Image (cartoon, helix red, strand yellow):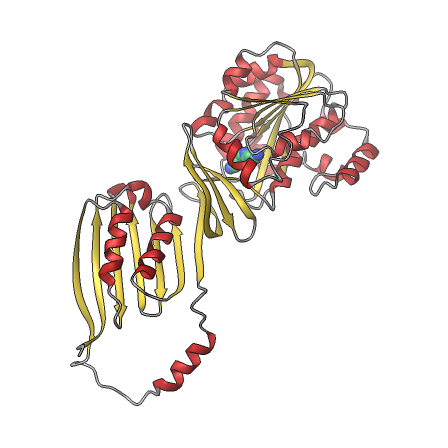
Amino acid sequence: MSTALGNHILVEFMNCDPHVMNDVAAIERDMVGAAQKAGATVINSTFHHFSPYGVSGVVVIQESHLAIHTWPEYGYAAVDLFTCGEMNAWISFDHLKECFGAKSYSAIEMKRGSVNLLQRNDFDISSAREKAAEWRNPEFYTRNVWFTDKDEDQALSLRFTGDVFVDVQSPFQRVRILESLKYGKMLALDDMVMTTEKDEFHYHEMISHPSLFALRHAKNVLVIGGGDGGTVREVLRHSNIEKVTMVEIDGEVIEACKVHLPQIAASFDDPRLELIVDDGIAFVKNAKQAEYDIIIVDGSDPVGPAEGLFSVEFYTNCYNALKAEGILVAQGESPKFNEKAFAELNQTLQGIFGENNAPVGLFFVPTYPTGMWSFQYGIKGDCHPKNVQNVDEIRQFVSDQGLRYYNEDIHFATFATPNFVKALLRK
Ligand code: SPD
């Protein structure tokens, strides 16, 4: 007969794979798997990824709990396996050791709730058992797994189901497609949210239509980046566009989105599109002068492969590749999240296109940190989007195409900037 209510194994997993130690989805899957393998009934799991790295989480099981805290920088996981009843927690231990690739480990096992020290009271456990059976369905458990897009001080977290459709390390970045509860499937590059099924239209309509209505005769458009396909989908809505050249560095992004985000990657078969998988920075450097009416830079944040998309040299090359009347639109970062990158990009554009030819358009994206995001423009010639006259045409287009963010009011409103933004832009 057991002399204790529970058994507690305190585990040190050392020299583990650091990437696994920082992967909230993998750790949740492995911890739940460890519980199930040992025959436990999983009630609930809650896992968080912490800034700048590390994962904490707990799997509540009918037989008590499994908990974890990781330090990827040390390849270390502190794990608690607290069980009661007949469950053999050493099965969970073996499973986790393998999943984490732990090269060394140690464990202390102790009994919890020694019956020699406890005195039984008259609490009626038979009715408690019946009540519990009424609400508990062992087929389902609640998962609580969070993806966090962050810097050192600020973050945006989305709860996701734990389902991972794609997780590949391309030559440029980690490409993931995950399922978020509120916004549907989501593309993440490294640890940054790029787009989600349910709010992608905010970004893709706003990166495209203001400039396309400012330059109604535009025929030839260059898109740098934009591997998910949302930007070219919007550009190709315009029948005046004869050719779009899209240059995306990472073929893995395109393939993942074609399979898992088909409503965003919806126009890759349009005959007006030429899709080139190559380095957009080099492409613009070698581009013909005065070739494009509009250049759209749908890049990621200024880390990793997108860093060069924020340089003076790149935007000078874009300026040269634009026709005498042409518009550059670039993903402009956030004046509330990455103020420095936002302000520096505008200084760069002012320097190349002229002080009054580098307006900023603000818009709202719920899945980007702070929600406040921007596109930054470089206007060459007399085609400022603020001066559009064809408002009726915009209204008709919006209605015909069923747009959900951009309209004739937003066209002008996007260029209104709060005072703190004006100060950042130093005009
Ligand atoms: N922090 C997010 C920056 C946005 C980058 N581009 C998104 C790609 C959507 N096509």
